[in-house]
Length: 142
Image 1 (tube, rainbow, N blue to C red):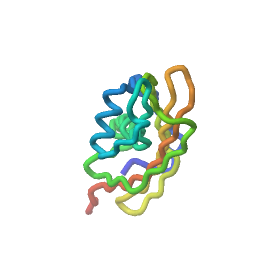
Image 2 (tube, rainbow, N blue to C red):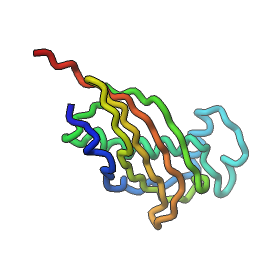
Image 3 (spheres, rainbow, N blue to C red):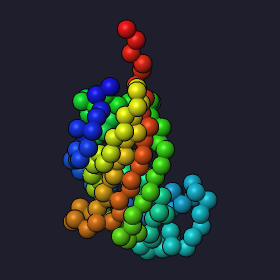
């Protein structure tokens, strides 16, 4: 296991910009079965949990960091919280930056708290998605 408290505070580069479109908002709302009129029209807002789609794209940096040795297949997503500044809307070009906030190791497992700051490409802060992940590594036997 390579992940430790020494990684707390590590921030990864922003994801490529993602253009929030009316089509993607409508598709996501349909998948939720949510016909809220705020998700339609000329400049609809996205359902709140749409932010999780963009936050998850930032997780790629975490799982591709060879120093951490984390694998998605060995990870359980235990908790998700959002701190909103404003809703995501069609036309927003969004980037996501992931930061490791906390690491609690227990044997071959670790609870990892990460935050993903979503902002427009122009720098307007939109929402912070905070997740707690449980990761396990194979037991090493002597």
